[in-house]
Image (cartoon, rainbow, N blue to C red):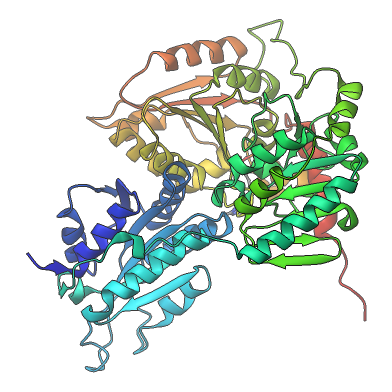
Length: 566
Ligand SMILES: Cc1ncc(Cn2nnc(CCOP(=O)(O)OP(=O)(O)O)c2C)c(N)n1
């Protein structure tokens, strides 16, 4: 039959590769949810709240390329706002669809429920415009196709979220059938002369360099440039470092890999080589207070080629209209090998090493320590594993955990919103390709923000392994600047799982207070099926990574800069 606005939307969501979308129902969106259900190729997934739905769509986008969620007007969308802004920060195309008021209400001068009680219905759209790359309000069915396509196409092109508001009485209104899908997706391309100019400049600089080095940045994945980066690395043969939020974007077992470059908390031996390089080509970096350890790890501009998603900045020029992947591949075809930085690293460090991990605890019955916990976690990571870490000391412990080839790493370093990890774990697992597995490491403080989404991990029988690090509070905060506010009420975290299981769940909750308890819990996890395993690992509050201590001091120092006088 004829298309409706709702199944036009469903068709586009299916065409951009979604198999699932997340939602919380509300009276404004029930008809839209029915229209979406009529498309059997995409599955409707309920979440406990809209913030969790947004984080789940973020996690899904990390596994699947893009994500979507449906909310009701105001009370739903505003909860999702934090998650959508996070998708913007993390460069993830998450589509938020919010149902809105009936198109007759403005002319009728009505005041409506789920609003702040005024006659202005546009403020939600205005707010979402600030955290999306495209925002549209469908107030007439005729405009639905072009508006929906504009929002979705822009989100995919910019790798950022988009906002689509659909009046509740248009959800099942007739509209034109969708045109060919290719009209929606427009690839990021370079201007040919712009690309040539950028490549020429880079080639000259690299030819003049005696000791070039490559630095992988966070945008490599969002802009499809991971392979191009590796091409350039293997053409140059130089040392390759990665920024902390690009961990895993270059294989850690690659002979040219020299570790994480993070200033004073870099992988041992990495920082001196970056400092020694005379030309650094950084591919897709975001240099922020966190990724530069409080501005102590900024490559000198005179040595830097900074290749961004749409432009390349040189010491003395900027070339715009240049796509990152095009640029890296083209330069790879022009350069000749220069391995001085890699040779120097090997002189200093011998074979490529990561963090040397302490041996297993001599007394398995001793109280569990952070080092022992992460030694055992590292053993669980294989080529099919994704390690997802929540904001907290898990960032640092995860950062120096070795990834075998094929393993992946997920971190939300730019947005850094605690509570992201549980729903992101749910969404990531929903989008996970068969045969892969997810291990998430989440601190007790973060867990308390969005814990209830574990119930949906149980509902969908996801066999995710969650390490809940119970160090009695907000340790990452304590190490930056301590106070009574960093201490929280303890929960019986493992004891929550049976509560969420109720009569039909198969989650498993275990506690580990010693090395041997942890080892047996992990063994039980290996043989558990039909639901998630949450292992509550109890360690001391100040048992944190040395990197957190050093990094925390630098970030605290950066935060405490006095206001500029005058
Ligand atoms: C939404 C949001 N609210 C507050 C913060 C500040 N914050 N960052 N990390 C934390 C504490 C994290 O504690 P945990 O998850 O227990 O992790 P650990 O640091 O390993 O103890 C806070 C309170 C934040 N990053 N995001």
